[in-house]
Amino acid sequence: MLALSLFFSLISIVYGACNPSNITCWPTNEEINRFTHSLTATLLIPTSNEYSKYCTPKNLLITTRPYFIVVIESSVNIKQDIIKSIIFTKEHDLELTIFSTGHSYTGRSSGIYNYSLQINFKNYKRVSFNTNNDLNETIMTATTGNTLDDVYSIINSTFPYKLFAGGQCPTVGIGGYSLGGGHSPLSSYLGLAIDTIYSFELITANTSHIMCYKNGTYFIDDDRWSNNSDLFWALRGGGGGTFGIILNISYYLYDLQNGLTSLVILYPYYYNNTLIAKDIYNNFMIHLATFSENVNGYALSEIFPPSQPLLTMYILYLGTMEQAKTELFVLTDYMIECQLNGGYKYEYYSTYYQWQINNHFPGDFYTVFFSALYSYNNITNDEIHYIDKINSFSIEASNIFNISLKGSFVFTNTMLNGGGPNSNIGFNDTSITDGFRESRIYAAAGTQFLNSNIVDNVTIFMDKYAEIFENISLGAYFNEDRYNNPNWIDQYWDNTHYNTLINIKQTWDPKPFLFTCHHCVGDGD
Image 1 (cartoon, rainbow, N blue to C red):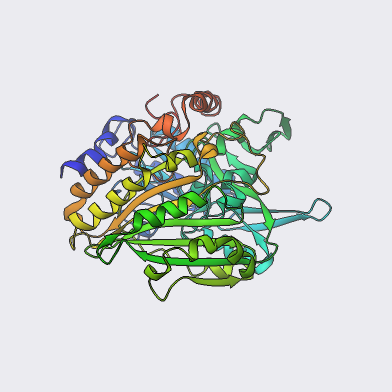
Image 2 (tube, rainbow, N blue to C red):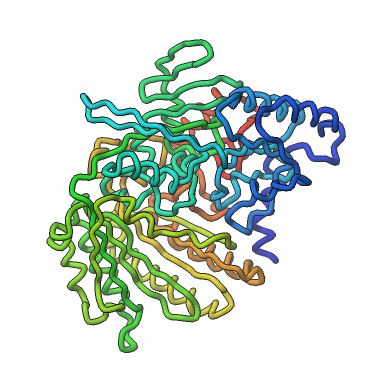
């Protein structure tokens, strides 16, 4: 399996870590027992009954597994348990991994090697709110074991008419999602998740317990304040598993004024044996220039071989149905005779959660991604042929895999802008690539399938198109990209931001790095 071997070949050359065959560093049974009894948290090893429940990633391509799993369930002694785990990791030259939901599709939360020590936050779920009526501010603090669905549900029961800049997939964990940047169905209005963050609480590599804010850092143990806010900047887009062990993140919530309206339009790629997808995409892309910040959502190609591709628009409009119709008629009235399922459909929701609960994650699959960022000029430039490339990807995927895939492909165009309450976020205010600030569209292509026999062919196909789209893009997304992107530094952060990030990392996590992962800040450094 050539491509699968390539997918994991880099694992063996990145960092060294101890394993059970190395008696000079591997802990003895007595040392393991002593460590176990020192913890308030539960320690699992591969022979434990619940071991697989806590370490299985969503992507079936990821095969690395930890040896030790420290399951954090309570805030009681959490700091001490994490510090003991860090010390144990360093004493025995183990790789340290941080795991919440397993949604890291390139396996960052599962480790570069087998036999790591994993700190697992899957059961560590706490959410609280702080409201300042004078400033009209509501801040939500959520521990990193929470999924987006956990957070949406609690917001709905407490502040149902507030908006949180979360993603669409309900089973994604807030930690990795936020640290990588966090695009959202509401990104035209709210921007990225990192644009809405108020603070981080974390444990650093030297076991300091700190709070990071926009204007500085508070050292909890020493009751000491520093005006240095470099770490806060780095955490907003620098990626998960890199700078420390995040305990919780605090976010600003935003008012939902007039409810929201969804619009769904479904087209076939061909109508009367004529390709119509290009014209439909063109119409959508042209009107991106005139849409207000209230127009959010996606336009995507969905491919379920052997059927022909479908072109679907999932629009989320912040406002009433009447307001939505006034602005979105340019979509609904276009090639109306070709629309499937009886034509376009509007639906009004008084809260975001009413819309969100209809989204479901299908389960665990073999998964391959790539991503790219495009400005309005990119996608409308006749020389770049962006829409032609989407259609080529979609048609080829539906043809070459036929019924062998046992899954699906999707090419999603997410609308970006950040023109609402966070429109003042500048290019250098966060560490993510400037491409996210310049772009109107975030494009992500992904495939999820169950046929392990075609992993090689799928990976080769996705890599081919990844190179095509990367060559005309302004960057890529740390959380959703292919495993072997050779230009990952420039694509995720650009070289200027990366140089600052690596300097910040060396300050908070001096070499040899405690926090390491594939294509993270410091990888290979």
